[in-house]
Amino acid sequence: MPSEMITKQKNPSSPTPVAPEKDELRAATQQHAKRVRRLKINIAAWVLGTILLTTLWVVNQWQDNGALKSFGHEGEAGQWNPTLWALAVGIWGLTVGIMALRVHFERPASAGDIEQLERIGRLKFHIAAWVLGMLVLTPLWALIEWQDNGGFERFSNNSQPGNWEPWILYIGGIWAAVIAVRAVHAYITRPTAGAETDGEAERRRSRT
Image (cartoon, rainbow, N blue to C red; front, side):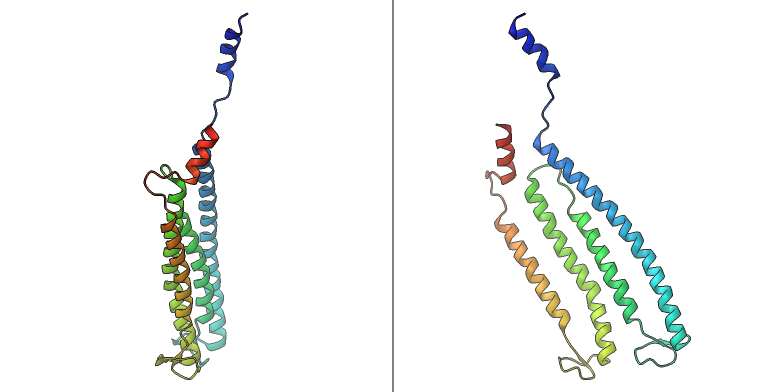
């Protein structure tokens, strides 16, 4: 039998190679699905945990200070202190919120430059996480400073009545500086028109 006929019979049964792009997209999709499942579990845990913590806080404050009349920190009858409850629920909620932002902004790309799209998605995630963090941490900072030093009069570090320590500004400023560095890096490393990205070069080498 001629060798050409044997070759023709073997070729149809040979496995069709899978494109590297499809492998990358499949892996990214599976990773995204895992993140979505973890997010749903953490949301459910946060909701149940908030209900439990709120119940325990109400019982504790009612036993210590009687029926609620006002929120306060002097420990007088009828004054309930919400600081610890707010810290526990707020920090936990901030963590779950950041997870949700990551799921939203780091979705797998379906076409184009995958590396650059993922880099931009991560940058948007960090910006949104900073905004969410400031929205959660700023009220907690105000609550802590109000409990320690009373009503706000001025920013100061001497812990006198009315003086609030501005540590929230340090946290927000350092966090924003880190995001700015990441934004500059994403801008510098973006591919120019006609340039070949690392991923494209790797895929081209794998085909040869």
